[in-house]
Amino acid sequence: MLFQVRGAIPTTPWELVLTSSRETQFVLGILAVFSLVSWYLIVLKWWQFRRMRQLGDGFLAEVEKAPRLEEAYHAAMRLPPSPYNRLLREAVHFFSELKPGSLKGAGPPPAPATSAAATASSATLTTTQLEALRMVLAKEVAAERDTAARFIPWLATFGSVSPLLGLLGTVLGVMDAFIGIAVGGSGNITAVAPGVAEALVTTVGGLAVAVPAVMAYNLFVNRLGLFAGELEGFAQEIVGTLAREGRI
Image (cartoon, rainbow, N blue to C red; front, side):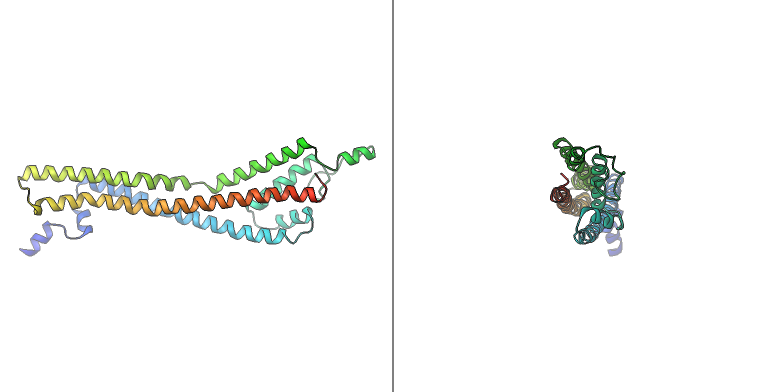
């Protein structure tokens, strides 16, 4: 008799899941998919940010050893691809297009100058050209930030939608429990408790998906802001290096 009672009334969360209604199991299935995807994105973005941090440290260590921008450029091109050397390459190539031959080995050969005045005028950038260079650097920083931010909004989506799905499953479970009470004609705690417990399982599932997703989203948004700030600072450092070397 005791075995039959324990088999009829769920006594563990897993038994609640197995004996729940189809609606509840459907909601739990969706939450399980959300959980798998969110954890995959959490691991993926953690690895990506960790990789970018390692590449950035190696890049800055090599660039700081170079006395001039040309040496820094050639040293950066020997390193693995990263947002930092892509930004430097874009800056050097654009500067070389504006002033051909001003950076050795980084652009087309200089055009023959016809006078000393022409040579002097080709040595530095005009105000318009400097503003164009800043715009190119800002565009590259924004592109790298957008690339690093890929898939992060999905964590916010899972974090906000999962509790709502859990609440939906809870409402459906409570409705099913009340219908069962009405059909069975019994309102004692033994008849009500399993249905209410089954309904609350989806709420627990929704929170279990939402909590790590929201925590990871906030963490990655913070890291993304730091990453974008470092790129912007490096872009300003490129402009400062050009000014220090008398190129702008």
